[in-house]
Amino acid sequence: MSRSPHLGLAYLVASQAQKEVTHNEALNDLDCLAQLCVLDRSLNAPPASPEEGAAYIVGSSPTGAWEGKANQIALYYAGWRFKEPDAGWLAFVQDEGKVFVFSGTEWEPLAAAYGQASTTWNPGTLVNGAGVTSSAIAVAGAAFGDFVQVAAPYDLQGALASAYVSAAGSVKIRVQNQTGASVSLAEGLWRVRVQKA
Image (cartoon, rainbow, N blue to C red; front, side, top):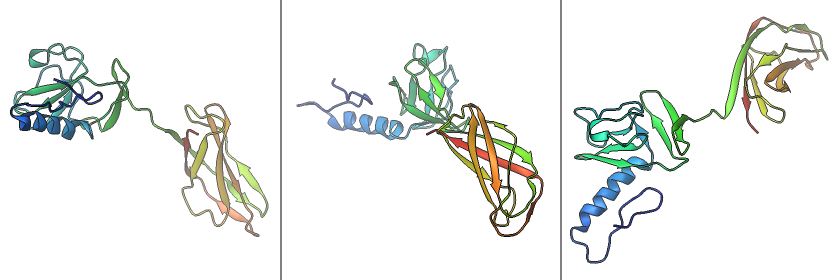
């Protein structure tokens, strides 16, 4: 029977008896795969009493009804159905609270689009027109051209805070006082987030 190229949904064919069966099976597959959310990605044996509509990523050493289905999506609709993922498929894994992507051979955590770090820093007292720069803060993967955000731990009293990539894997915070008066800033936990350009 012909199937759709990406999700493997069964097509209806001319003069097919019980077309509703094929159609409903395709709807069940689409219901699960369109916003793929699985309960677990490491089980090797199917659960004894799965709920209708439950989905799993089959573990690396499957047994029983899952034998030979490693890394496939196991769907339960009055019995087990399996979908072989294509490279690029995404799945939210509920028990880990993370999104995984299928590389073509295995499921890998989806890399965060940003890196983040924090540092305890005391900018001190800044007279009008003065500025101060923090020590380097390690942020894995930070590179020139990335966007950097900074979160101050308190009211900056009108002073401006910015952050930038100072070297590969490193970020600095800069506080500049242009308020027209002195500003005294205390020690606090500063946070930075680097977003890949």
